[in-house]
Image (cartoon, rainbow, N blue to C red; front, side):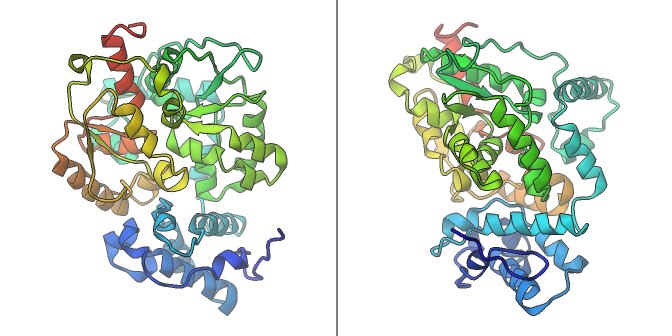
Length: 406
C-alpha cells in the first residue's frame, strides 16, 4: 500500500490524518486533557492542529511545538477510538518532522539518548550514580524528579542463561539498556521464572542493548532505525524474544513499521511480553499452596505500552493471579505520567497525572503495586509506593516454595 503524504512541513500520512471524526470519545482517556481541561491538550485538539499545519499553512511556532510535545504518548485514545485512528503514528511522524526542522529534541536530550547504546558506559555511570546517592551527593528530590530509583545498584546480579544461542534456545530474553543498568534484578527474576517452565533461555550478544524506544518517542527516527538494525542482528534464529519492559516490547514490535522491510516484520512477530509468554505455559509453571502465595495484596497497574499498544495486559492477571491476590484499579488503565523521558521534559504535567494515579491505587488498599515497565515502576516509586515487576513477585513466591534456586 502506497502512503499518501501531506504536502505540509510534517509530511503526515493523509489517510491517518483525516480518519478522526472529532467525536470526542477519546477525551476522558487522555491524561493531558484530564490534567488541563484544554482542547489543545487532547488527541482531537492535536489532530486539529496537525491538520491546520498541513492543510491551512499554520506556522510551526513555539506554541504549536509545545502542544505536540506535551503529549505523553500513552495512546489510550487509540483504545477508546471507534474509528481506529492511529494517533501514535501521527505523533511519532510529527515529532520526527520537528526534529528534522530543528524544532524539537534539545541537545542535552540527544546527548543523553546517545549514551544508551554504550552499555558498559551505562553500567559504569549507573554504579557511580549509585555511589553518589549513598554519599548523599544526589538530592532525593532530584532523584524523584528524574524518576530514579532511590538507591541505584552498585553491584548487579550475574544473569544465568541456560542456552548459548539460536541453536539451543527455546526463547531469548531481551535485556536492554536502562532496564539492565537499573533493574537487573527483574531480568534475573524473569530468567528464573522462565527456566522454571523447563525452557532454555538465551541472552543477546553485542548490539542488543538498546531498542531505540526513547529515540522513537523523541522523534529521532534515524537513530532508532540504526539501533533496530543492530538489535535484530543480536537475536538470530526464530525463537521468541521475550521482553520484561513494556516500552521496549512495544518498540521491538514496531520494527516492521519503523524499517518497513520483511526482515523487520518477521523479527517483530517474534517479540512477546514476558507475562504473555508465561501465560502460554501456565501448565508448566510450578504450583504453590495457599500458604505459599504472596503475602500482600497486589494492585495491578497496566503500563500504557502494554495495555494500549501491545494489548497484552490480560496475561499479567492469569499468570500473577496464580501466586498473589490481585486488586484492579478503577480508572480503565489511565497513564501514570512516566512516559519514558516525559517526566523529565514535562515535570509539572507528569506530576499531576501521577497524583491522580496514586489516588486511584490508594483506593484499592493494596500494599504492593505490580507494573511491567521500568519507567512506570520508578516514577510511581518516587511517590512512595512499593512497586514491583510481576515476575519479581512470582520469583519470590517460587523461591520461597523451593521451586527455583534461592
